[in-house]
Image (cartoon, rainbow over all chains, first blue to last red; front, side, top):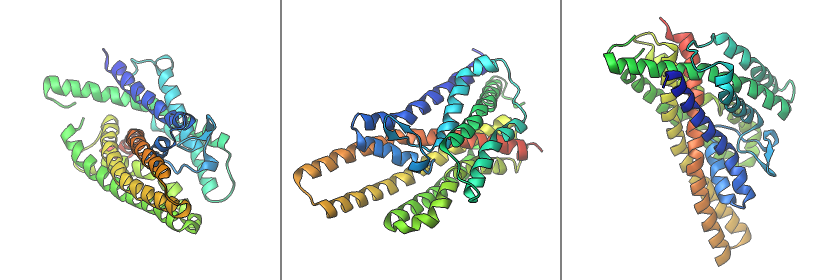
Length: 162
Length: 165
């Protein structure tokens, strides 16, 4: 199996875990397991502010991360699933950093203008701006992981770095 | 490519350092807001802004430390960042767990003080506590994966900026 395919499978596995972890607390709450959902929410508070007014609702309960984080993860997951179709698994070149910066602009402008009190954003804008940023991440991370797998393999076989 | 051994040390330093400091800071402020709710108006803002900053600092910090001796490729930055993210995420989860226990005990105490205690409510609290514990363990995987991901992206960007000499 090629390094690109291995990197993709690894990345897809973690993305599916991420998707499950995102919806699991809402499913638990829906099933009446409020204590379990509370624990999950407390753990996720390490990576998101979880403000209820800035979070989306699923199955009648607030999600464990805010709308912007939900957008990032949704973009990441969707883009990873579509990666073999959009970029192909043979491509090894990591795109220029400029595309990552461009994808970050909507989120940065929205977040900064809100943080400085110029305006109040909406959950739809937070979701979309997060999605744009999340969607470009696999284009960098999958080739980087593939490159790393290749280099480790070469190092193990020859004992030499590139 | 940098040797993995050369990435682990900076990843450990940046991951554990930022993970512990960041987690104490964020969770500490969160707990402070629970104790004194009016503080939310002035502490809420830095808490919100900082939640994504710690994993990003971990990735960039690792690249800065690792690139002191030799240049780093982009893949090295991403992998170093990911390693640091695992360490940082684990450190953050452990500290978060201590605060979680503190918060849960505080919440149970408040509930018992306001609504009284009988056998049924104690059993409910016990069941809820076990469920919450299990939920936290599961949620920790999510937290560590996210830390790893954010830190890896930050490491990648850091390597693009600082890595090549």
